[in-house]
Length: 413
Image 1 (cartoon, rainbow, N blue to C red):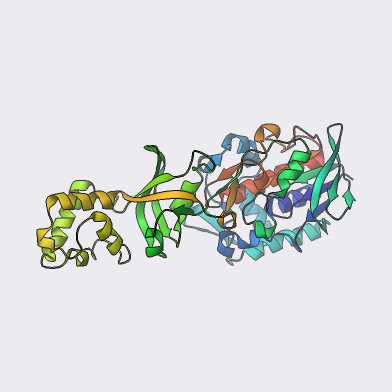
Image 2: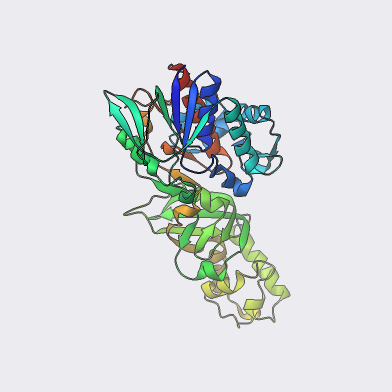
C-alpha cells in the first residue's frame, strides 16, 4: 500500500487526502492546528461559498493568475463535480445570486466537518505538528522534518500548506519555505481580494456607507487598470466590498506601484447631459434652499457633505444662484468621485494570496513537482488565484483532487 503524507489540513489538503485514500493509499495528514479546516470555517463570512455553479468558460474567465495551468484540473473536477461530491457526503447545497454555491445550512463548519468525517471513514491518520523542511536526496523527498524533531517518511508527499492570507489560521507563508527546500521557485506574493487603504479623511467620514450600482475604476499613470460595475463600501481607512476586492487582484505591490488613482462613477446610468438635466430638475424644486440641502434626492446623506466640499460650491449658496460652470464641476465630481489608493490592507484581511510556487515547475495534469518526483502541490500555495465568488475554493478542490489521485496512483490523472 502506497504511503502518502499530506501537509496542510485546509480544503486542498483534505480533498487530496480523501482522494488518495479512496484510491487505495495509506494517508497521513499533517496539520499544525488542533483540527483541520480552521481557515475553511471562516470563508464566506462563515457560510462557505464552496464553488460557483457556472460553465467551464465562465470559470476560466474568473481566474486572475495562470488560468491555463488550471484547465486540466478543472476538467478532472469542475464545479458540478464539487457539488456532486458534497451532496454524496450528505451536504445539501443551494445556489444564490451570481451562481455562488453554499451549504443550505449556511454553515461553513458543515463543509469542514463532512471532510473530517470522510477522512476518518477512509482511515486517514491526522498528525498534529509543524513541518519545518523537506529532506531531499537525488531528486526525491525522503522525509519531512517537523519543528519538534520528528521525521516523517512516505512514498509521496502532497504540499497543501496554503498561502499567507489569514495568517492567524496557520496560513502564514511557512509552506513556501518547504517548497523552496524541495528546490521550487516562489514568485512574489501579495494579498489579493483585500480591502484598499485610501489617502486622507474622506473614507473615515463615510465609514459604513455602502454604494450600489456604481462603477469603480482604478488608474495608474492615466491608464485604466481595472473598471467594473457593482457594489462597494467605505471603511475607516479606505474602501472594500465586491468591486474593491476584485480590483485588488489587479494591483501590484512593492516599489513603483502604489499610489493608484480611483474614480467612482456615482451615476453610471446617466451621461453628463442627462445628469445636468437631473440637477436642474432637482434644483428647480429646491431653488430657495442652501446648496448643501439640495442633494438629498441624488446622494446618500453621508456622502452629501463630502460632495459639497469637493465640488467647491459654498454649502450656504442658494440653489437658484448656482451657475452652469458650478453645475458642470458637480457633474464631473459625481461621474468621477476621486480617491487616492495608497496600499493594500493587512494580510489579516486578505481572502487569498496572489503569487506562490511557480506553476512552470508543476505538471498541470497531476500537480506533480518537476523538482522532486514524489512531491505534489495543491491549493493556495501555487501561483494561481481568482476573483471572489467561490472560484478560489474551486481551485483548491480541483488541484487537491488531481494531486491526491496522481500521488496514489503514481501516474497521470
